[in-house]
Amino acid sequence: MRRYDQSLGMAVSAKTYGQVGAAALVLFSSLLVWIVLKEQSSIYQDDYMQKSAVFLPYKYKVEYREEGQGETTEYYSFVTPDQTVTGRPKEAGNARLMEAVERKIEAILRRESDLYRYGLLLVYSAWCWRILRNDPAPKDLHGIALMFCLYFAFSIGGVWLDISQDAEQIGRYLSRL
Image (cartoon, rainbow, N blue to C red):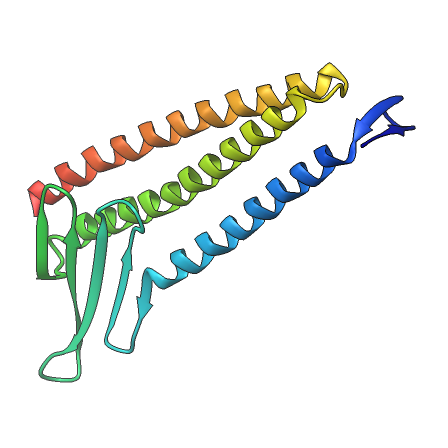
C-alpha cells in the first residue's frame, strides 16, 4: 500500500520504512554483539593480563610474578601467525622492544574493531541502497547510499593496509627478541 508523503512530495510505500528500520535494528544489534565479543577477548586478573584479537591471530599476555625480595617481574608472551614468544622477562635491554610489540598489537586490536565496524556499516549502506533503489524516492538518496558504500569499502582497504604494515613491524620486532 502506497501513501503520499508530504516531506518527499510523492507516494511512498510503508514497506520501505519498515525495511530500513529492520536494517537499522540489525546494525545496532550487530554492534552490541561486537562489543560483547571484544570485551570477552580481554582478561584482567591479579597476576596476569591478556588481550587477544577476536578474528585475527594476534595476542599478548603479561604475567606478574613475585621474585625473591618482593620485587615483581613482568613476563611477556606474544602470539602472532608467524612466531610465538613465551614467558620472556622484561629486562632493561628488551623493555622498549617489548613495549613496542605490545603497542603494535594494541593498534591491531583497535584496527580490527574499525575493520568490523566499517564492514557492518558497508553492509548496512548497501542494504539501504538496495531497499531505496526500488522506491521512487528522490534519486539523491540513492547516490548518498552509494557514496557511503564506496567510502566504507575504501576505509576497509585502508584499515587492512594498516593492519598488514603493523604485522610486518611486529615480525621485525619479534625477530630481535
